[in-house]
Image (tube, rainbow, N blue to C red; front, top):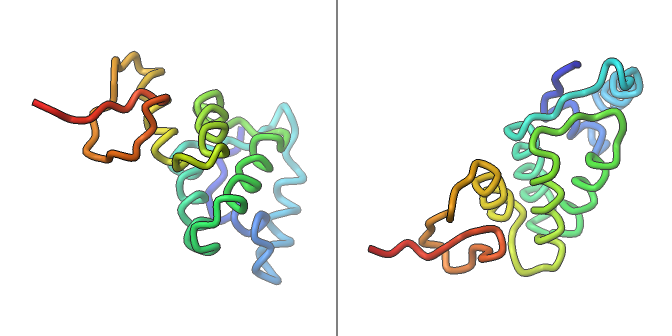
Length: 132
């Protein structure tokens, strides 16, 4: 496997650099199932934050980028099942992808709940109001 940094993925997703975007595309085209590109959760969140900032929080751009990475082959995405679940919840429009991902990752780690002060956090992803 080859680890991928956010800047490689962003150059392809945003196609915003005349030199680096084509180079990044060429690098990703060299990936194969035997030599897959690994996207860890920190990299994925850097991509999420950059796209959210670049497009002023418009979720449709973020959802399209995540779907592109999830359907892209040959990528291995850390926490893929939780990423898919978080994206599904975010697409219904009520919750943010990041909050949903936090909750689903905590559920995978056998957390009974995720305490939060955020009243808008997704109950479906295991969030519960922090209370004494």
